[in-house]
Image (tube, rainbow, N blue to C red; front, side, top):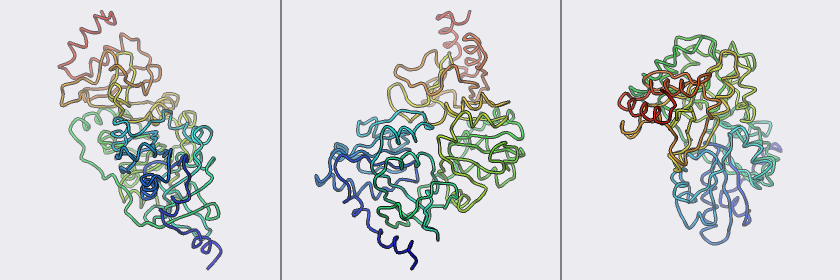
Length: 435
């Protein structure tokens, strides 16, 4: 047994034993999605339930399960979840008052955590220790370095199913205060079926993307449809916040080779990954894949260095000015800002770059127009009117950048659902926006 294996054995414990080392008033930090050790969360919750811990804070991003602090009001009183990008699980808890939200640009969270929140404890899910004594944080680099900046204790959940990303944060066994093994399947998102509206939207966007472009795609039916429409393209590159299933497909079919990227040439770049088991296997020990920190990946100055950068993101509403809301329904929370505005800004500063905000023209089964004169009161602006470039629905592309308010309004009405166009025109004339 070498020294690393000896240290490993000495530091091996259960999640309950790790939680027993915590004191009341502790802030715990975890990175995004697959990085979260939910068995540790439950061990902390059990101590809270027994009255042994109070005033605990759990900071995280994009939860993939519902731990007790999200669902149990009694636990939430003394184990408060704080989410920076509340997904499908956390948004319910936020809107129910069981969790809090930390606003900010995703690129800024390493410094927000490291310099302002300053969690005392870092927890994460990692790949098994290598022969040099290092664990890889696998499918996330994201905000890990910021979380570690203030951490006094480090606890790791070691999962053999976590891919070993060569460029993710590497944690040495000597840094670790405790670890436990868990071979549970990682959360996955399997490729979905592309619906008719998403397909129509993709048919507008795909022809606008030149060979040799660098891509940022989100998750969902529209990005998947766009990716499917790019399989005959060549020399595409990937520099993205989230690595997704459709990107693996583009690499495997030869559309993406990253050969035209001026930086990280030949490499796919992301800051976290969430998708299928096939995608995780692709990342594992792959030298052509780079998982880098979000304050670098999402930096608009870095994004802008890629010629013909193409950014594709989603929205809930867009108003006549071009203000994009992607985070709320009025005051009802949906998600965080994430990196949308970072990639919009980077794309429009890229030589030949373009940003597309794409979404179906209506909501509530066609009863509500997503293109509106003004955003719903309380709606959060994710991308400002000054940064927005192109808006896309199933009815076409509206160019907004470089257009006046009147021109923007006409362009937006032209891609609204036809049954709402007369009312939108009436409102625009009423406000003296168009004559």
